[in-house]
Length: 208
Image 1 (cartoon, rainbow, N blue to C red):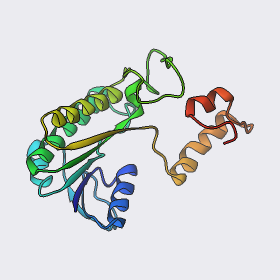
Image 2 (image 1 turned 135 degrees about the vertical axis):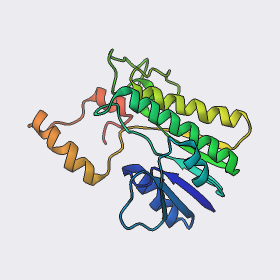
Image 3 (image 1 turned 60 degrees about the horizontal axis):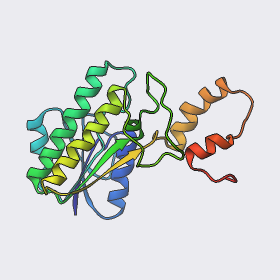
Image 4 (image 1 turned 90 degrees about the vertical axis):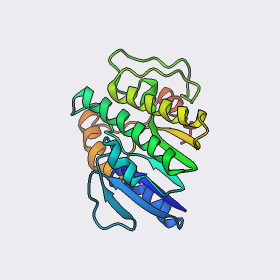
């Protein structure tokens, strides 16, 4: 089975590509960033360009679309929105023309409005699940929601079967302790456990 993984040089995409290779799939990673030494084939491309996308997303059984600007900070909001929506559209259309049978879209928890809101969001109930209403306020969350809509439109056309996964903040053990740990220790020098409310938010059992 040949699978194309967009964003395969990134934090999430690299792990997706590694898992697919370990499962015995023929993987082509497509990313604007050249990875180091990896176990899959790589092609460098700007996926906001439809022509380049059509040339590379072809002759495949499945597409996993991970490539995106992963947050609305550090870049102009218009750039985040334009890049993510154009990339989603181009990859979906290319997958349709390639005859891919399956499509996986890396969406985000941010479609609910967290955590990049300007006006605070109060969840209607806890824990948060997929029945919560979409409430994106920022360019990133909005772009991810529209990406889901692009995928859904292709499914309605009978193009392929698909799933959009609304993932929370992606971290590895290394990136968490290198990046989040020091910041947490600065903000909260005394060790504290999760409150009951925080555990309900995360869907964790009381003893976890």
